[in-house]
Image 1: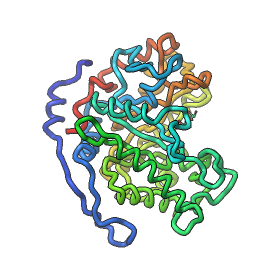
Image 2 (image 1 turned 180 degrees about the horizontal axis):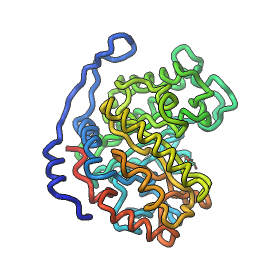
Image 3 (image 1 turned 60 degrees about the vertical axis):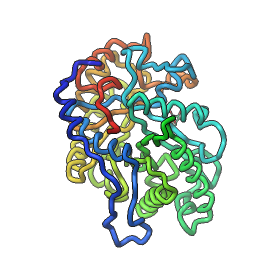
Length: 377
Ligand code: BMA
């Protein structure tokens, strides 16, 4: 554990609150259930997420315990841990293609293995977030298949694929409900449904549905999980980096359906793109800081990274200065693929930014697994 102020941790623990059911006060929409419930641990996670920025921000990595640049499926291994001796505080998992009912995700991960790793991360005291690149229910293509328009229309009530869509959501609901520890605790998950919708590369993206349809898609999904008793989910809204303000909020489904304001933003074009990346982070995180305060919601960089980390001091000179002044609860780096050459965003032993990552880790504001207070009490 790095040296963090123990008094602050103590104050943090004292300030934890537990909440039960919450009444929904919006009476205008008949589709909204009048009450919803969350497990105690899930509600505690939400309260604790808002308090994390007092200490710094959590470090997260997608698929961290499942594989790394040169390995796959080795128990307790992690590229991040290989370098700094500690796991990321946040681990992201991807359930794309679970809807088809098969054993493996679109990234070839067995869902039973994924379930085990999710429960393990919870037992370690870490946080879990899940993304879902759902296939295109009209064409059977993947979520990037946007040639056929009207996919969202087709899955909404009255659409020709509505029943199919419900059956797909149900597979997800069953998976979330199956994330249970040996002691019977349901593992809290921060779900990021219908992410990066301000771009148009997914069938639920900007040019592929209307604002009203997008909101309906979100609210339908939320209500469906509620109705199925999935009470271990928090919901992250995570647009891509298409401008702040109006663009970010245009399709926001409403405060009652969102728990965290996220941002998916990548550093592209290597050295040439440093300024663009940092400026965008600054602009959008300034906006999110205000919105988060106004709406009483935690904020986060829900996906980021520079593919192949071509800049040796990227962690301390590019990423850190662009995010450290904002009250983000976490930053999540995208995956270290083992089967796609050069598709990695986290460090690994021998990678050129390794030393700089150790510096980043040693900064008291970057919180890894051993640095975080209990998230679930
Ligand atoms: C993308 C890429 C793909 C992957 C998808 C879902 O950003 O990493 O290779 O299939 O995420 O994990």
